[in-house]
Image (cartoon, rainbow, N blue to C red; front, side, top):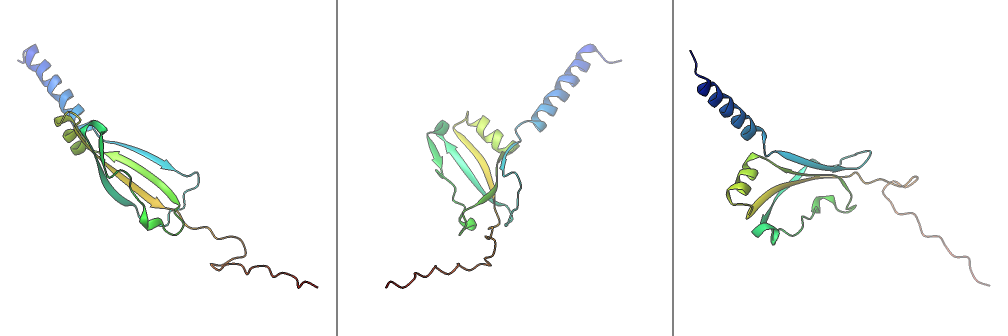
Length: 125
């Protein structure tokens, strides 16, 4: 026969385990209305130190999106490991993962990757 204390202890342990395993993983996405990715996701881990006073790096450059500089999707996420680090350091160190995809370069109608010729001026008389 089980005592009420042991049943209560099991419920608390199960609830705690559930919260620990399911907490700390989150994602934020920014996408365009009609996504047309041109690249596979590129990733970079960024770190915030001293409660946001120092960010390393200050900004993430998407060099793979040149020459159009168009982003199709940006995703910022954290997982249990990053949340654990942030919690254990009382927020002093907070890592995050930034992921992005470049957008396909859209061609203008009638132009196939070439510049249109410049209009010629009429001769002056």
